[in-house]
Length: 242
Image (cartoon, rainbow, N blue to C red; front, side, top):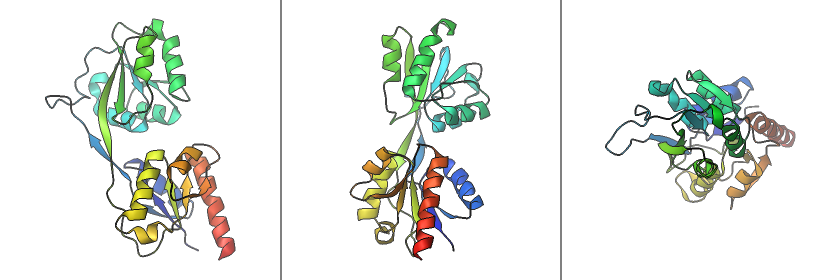
């Protein structure tokens, strides 16, 4: 029995998830809800090729870490990463990584404990435009010089891909993508099939953001392995009812 799964993550991570789903016997459908837009500094300079004088980098997203592959001017700096997924991306980009293995709070405490090992320049937080939290403000308040540089913006998709029938499941990874999906599946082009698709949410916060639609399943932990477990449960339930 085939089981189609819409992957709403942006590129390039959507392709990785699609490969993982294919290995598990699913039929992935790429339906990115956020599109990457790389930004420039005032005057048009590439923010990844205008290093300034930072003493270290702070990275709080896999996307920012992936973009660091295009940042040779920063390669001599340690990259302090919020969690293991971001740390793996930064390591693959050639950086010396320090992994906070948690949340922005954990990253703040790690940088605070490492203050005596940082140089004279600021900690440079490379982030997206929609970054949540106040890492730079907290570091400055703690006496650690820090600056934020926005290097990309994720733009919301304006439509969902055309489908001839409802996908068997839709994977949703963030509150923002859940809100975009709910809007497009309710009002957008191709909405009729999409709003019938069961949604699998990465966390309760993602499920809550899906209103007025609802999640059919929620991952037990906010990671992809748990999301796949929730998806497998949904497939088992669907097979039992077939």
